[in-house]
Image (tube, rainbow, N blue to C red; front, side, top):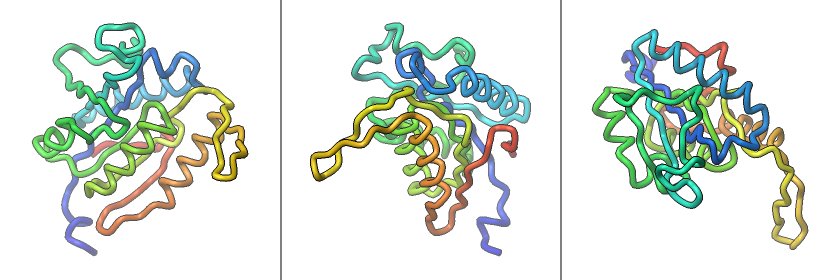
Length: 192
């Protein structure tokens, strides 16, 4: 057993971009928001840190309606919210410093949007050396379908169900040295 497997690890819940502007047309919106709200409650009850990520570029202008975090999962004013300008919640933010300050070594990630901020933040968490669990039924994106271009010039219609399924598959199949990767439904998530 490696040293990292023997060391107790503090787990944090990362709630990515559950904002009006990127959930209004989301697939399984109410289900995902309900599961995220439940995860927040369980994390807080166990004493696990909860960190909200809030996108602040493009149509997500601070103070605007699209920028607002959905009421059902909105943090209290004293809770940690980290604004970001890029898809990756670690890029150009204080997220890594905050996790280090809290002694966090394991992350549970949920939110929106699957094909952008969820995928990039989850991958970066693994690269940064965090044991990472993606909540399989706790992330979403616009319903779609939308046309994705192939290198040949053809397009492939892809909708949210396919994006969620592919992202779950991709993350579950991704390994990095010294870190654990999991993809679990919200009901199976525990905090330590």
